[in-house]
Length: 560
Image 1 (cartoon, helix red, strand yellow):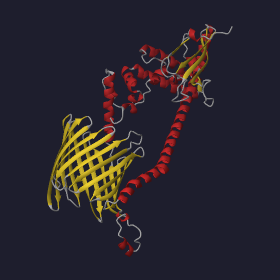
Image 2 (cartoon, rainbow, N blue to C red; image 1 turned 30 degrees about the horizontal axis):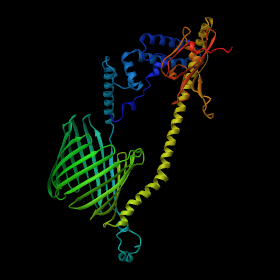
Image 3 (tube, helix red, strand yellow; image 1 turned 45 degrees about the vertical axis):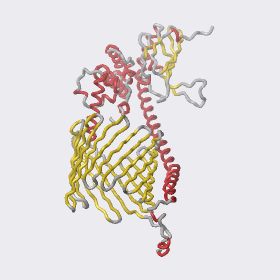
Image 4 (cartoon, helix red, strand yellow; image 1 turned 135 degrees about the vertical axis):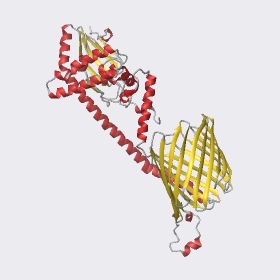
């Protein structure tokens, strides 16, 4: 799966254990004892006040749900691995119940894949490209005598001389079949045309797939084609393609065959043969690592033969910056290109490339890729090799990017981050308020039980919780501006006292009845002042630390 499983799961496995105040290894008998005690505490029939009755029903249902999950071995195994999210996946009801944790994880991944496949059937996965060619040769290739005779000739003439728009959408038909509909429109110097294509792709096995393509256009005519992909070995694959174009000049058949092989972990070798209007034999070597990308290609064909080498360096920064350069030489001349690419937002990548060629001249290519849409702006500056054109094509985009980045992109991203932080703060505050209300309701329901527990403990000089606080404490060495974030949990802890003992497991105390997290994401602890056999005791325990009281080491020695 594209994303790691940990990103999808809510690993709050200990919530149910904390709610019942049992160990993660608790036996069924221990679960029953805790469940019965909490049911007696929260049973709605014990309360006549409508509001208290409603609050008791809520807490009673939470305790019942926790017991239902943890008392069932199959549900408990799923919960221990995936948390509540795992229990929400459809399909567990038909899965064999005697499974190991490894088998359960494998089954979960299978159910997740099936859910993703159902989602795929609702997607169209649109992809598009818009290319706008700009002729700006007047900026550098100006003929002064001609411009003096033309009205307004003092201003350079810049025009859009070509444009191309293409779009495609996918429609999954079954888990193995996909239909792709694509189309394009092109215009160049006032002349243009378009075409539309329909492709049906079928995955035949884990080793290969095939597709058939039908097309029609007002320039080249109808088209029918076939394509097959096949993994020959773990390190080698083959792609074969053939087509038949019904053009005004007659039938134009074409065929291509490409094989590729993994030479090592980061290197691929390709060999391609094409027969048709542009017959050629091409071999290439591609090496891609974490920090670089290198390509070497040689083509022998009609009408073009060339040798090409390119190198790209990848900076290991947050913006995924890349710099690249390439040299290509052949019967058409020689072209040198260099440029840079950078991520400017979560879904957008901007790149600029300068192309210098003989006899092509100088061209600046701007590319913006946003999600599945690509925007290209090739700007042809001059037909000659002019140093001024090369300088402005290099320095111009850098200066514009620096200005836009400083004046627009940085303020925009900072505003977006502040907005997200504000939403997180509001969401956290809302969640804390809700948990606080639930904890206060639980404390109200505990009052009568706590009164009886205290009377019983006092009669035998047992365990009395005098004061208890939970949260983030500020020590004397901390900054004075920092405020303590603690809640009073005296009543909830006294309610958990049984036979003059209080036992808390290693689970987070925030999940205990009557507790909530007053400082999400911060380190918390529990501070208790209690009395046992008439002697004062005090203890501070970390949030995830198990606690058992009374203990002799907690005793507060009286001053003589």
